[in-house]
Image (cartoon, rainbow, N blue to C red; front, side, top):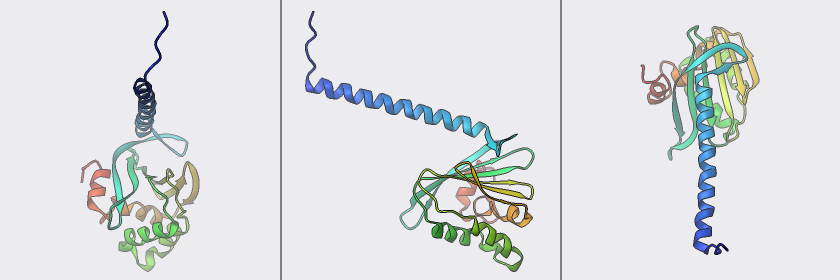
Length: 184
């Protein structure tokens, strides 16, 4: 028996079903990837694991532009890590403005060297980049898309670098609360 040809409407519906199926497969893969990452985000190749505590969408400017998703992790041994997944390009000069605001409570001669180190290591960011700040005791490591871009053993760098997000005071209390899983 010869199958009748599909009408243009049937062809359009079939095409949409295929597109939707592909999108669902991609979304399922992304959700799986995020759940695996959140459960066992590696700490620079060591076997120590950090646990996801919370995440927050960070919006900037008068129009509330979505800039990045911040995720906070820590371990039982005190290792802390913040990951910023960028949703848009951010020029270095704008990141430096963010550091100025976030590190303002430490704007004293005692912290000048630490603040300068942080600013010197701040890169330009592209949409999709993942910038990680890893603090383990007095050691700080900065990673961009998994590549180390800075390491410091200055205890003052380790003390202040996470403060814009989870310090006292943070830049935004609601972001801190979300990152800490509302445990504040």
